[in-house]
Image: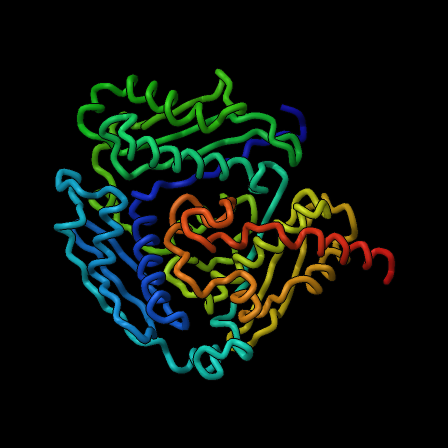
Amino acid sequence: MSNNSYVFTSESVSMGHPDKMADQISDAILDAMLSEDATSRVACETMVTTGLAVIAGEVTCDGYVDIAAIVRDVIRDIGYTDSAMGFDADSCAVMVTLDKQSPDIAQGVDTGRGLHAAQGAGDQGLMFGFACRETESLMPLPIDLSHRLMARHADVRSKDIIPHLRPDAKAQVSVEYDGLTPTQVKTVVLSSQHGPEWTERHADLTSETVSHIIKPVLGDWWHDDIDVLVNPTGKFEVGGPLGDCGLTGRKIIVDTYGGRGRHGGGAFSGKDPSKVDRSAAYMARYVAKNVVAAGLADACEVQLSYAIGVAKPTSVHVDCQGTAHVPESAIRDAIEQTFDMTPAGIITSLGLLRPIYKPTAAHGHFGRTPDECVPGSFSWERTDKAETLKKAAALDTAGV
């Protein structure tokens, strides 16, 4: 390794991981409420543990949603259908304790429900967006590979390519860098819950996992010197909510950039887009991705901040980490000319008042293809503002 070399690691978790189960349930409930009432206000938290799912939070929705049915459908879709796993859709109890949203919050967010022109932010806070040239999706390589390993795991499991894999799994990828350039993958860790027949065949499970999951995902990044660790303890039969309690919002680094970009601290799942924790983080990614796609920088981190009940961001900060091809001040000015970063502007430009959220709750909120899974989803992954940004930055640097 050169003096400028280092190793950076990111992880992802599967749709059957208990925390991600909680995220998917919360977002499925959000989607159902938005389907009934596009102006719903939703802050839905889920806890899953052995034999129990608890749904709590604050909502305002003009329509009926069968919460218990949604919870069971999500658990079933994830793959917990066998009572032998210790947690399954049919036997799981569902406890619902949802209250109305506080009127003190509502008065700052809506000026008349549904009238978004005067809509203020649903809370104070700071949100980050990030993009870089390491991958085609303009995501950091370690988190991109980790998410794709988990997506491939889900596909292999659903098609029974490796028999008796179970839903709970984790992936972790360590990448060596020279400066800001990834040079090689150093280590891959993949742990998958499995049936008891694999416990005495750990070497066979490792071989199957490398052949059907790891090599296909890594592609040209694969080399024979990668340190591959499959189920390092040698046994992973107990998983899901039977093994660990799951909570909404506990995988915020998995949800974003794997630690490569900073995080403001707010979780996404179960929150309607009036909550800037979610919507402004999507906008920040949209902005950063378009900056990089425009060729204005090779890496870009955007920070937005808000005050509750106030529409305009209290700050917009741009950090291109020394890779900017024009002054960062010109990039910031071009961003503010190009994007409406008020809550109403974000909701309108990204089309967020739709039931598009459950697919975001597994395999990452960023780095996906626009319209993936559901029409209109992942709209923040578009690069349709790149040319506008490029022209605006050029005008600024020309002194116009």
